[in-house]
Image 1: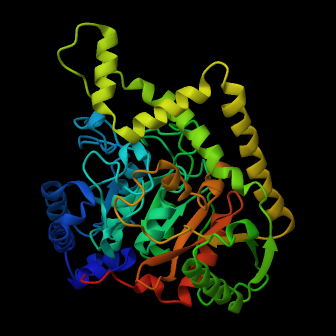
Image 2 (image 1 turned 90 degrees about the vertical axis):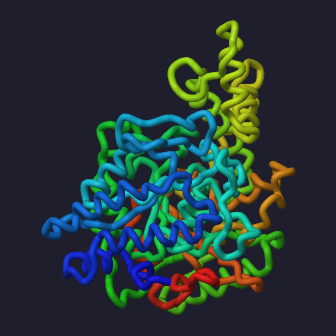
Image 3 (image 1 turned 30 degrees about the vertical axis):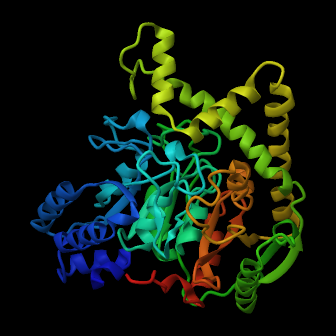
Length: 485
């Protein structure tokens, strides 16, 4: 493997400024890796010509002061990019060319980042395996017979397989953390409202968030500091200071209380996952953290609550794709009703249709109170569980990221309920709007990555990232590379 592919973001920037290599060499190395591993299907579009042209222009200039000057990044194809197709993994938007950039990509581009390409994803971010994409499934770089996770599987795969140094994704119910766990990398979502959603194509607006994939915590913090902060273009953005997020060398966790929720460590949890996560907890304890037992009693209702609220919001958000204004438009139609029906039938895949139907059902007259209103009440109870834990018991909560390692492609596609249950550990933090991160903490017996999820109180990203950084410093799991790379 080209040694340039092993460099962190800070190492790339430092090397470019010192003229030890050029932006063109970095871009070319990643493009070669993308071509070599194109069978993984991590990208919907690789921007080969554009990134080489931009890199060549950058090499002609004196290295600037941008934090990401010359760093190539991948972007999930749910974030709009001006002049570059943004499909959301769907036939519905197969030919959509946005006229503007998402705020997060604009901020990274202003810092000097170059766009490697748009990564594959479950259609409209609806899925936990990246098998629902119109462009085909993304393969796991650790085992090509397994899923990469979803819905941001392309971004996770690209970072794990050294097809990008870092990538952006989106997390609605775990779509950054779960694929990060499956692919053995870092996956971070902040507090809801911390990072702008402007230019993020909507699935469920009260849950959708932009997230970050990196190979280590340092790179995660680097990107987070650049894209976090208030955005007047996003009505859900919160005008709250981000603060300084800096890793303290040789920091310990003395005095930190880490809550271990009983509801996440039931007998149903895979024994290998339980053993690996317990070892990670011991490593945190050895750094001074106090492990305390806590209870999040409404956890068992989280998946049911999520799969009422998110489809309800999806059915509303996706009603705009009617074949009239933009998106797929059916041909040979004779009436407006037929236009709607054929355009949406042809443009949406099976999983999206399923969730639209569920959403319309729970919002319909006679069922709204029984389902949607009740789900919103339970959502409040779940958020209160976390609030009570942070107020009275702990500073950080630690759990497995997923109930199993990456499963085989096709293993769960015939049973939507089993697929949905794969989100059981990530959904609660999403419903509560809390910051959470998945970090690699070990491997199963068949050499598949296992993730440790850390959750913090709202707006406490600094404590969350610092805790993750301490764990990273005393372990080597983040340095592991998929076989054959």
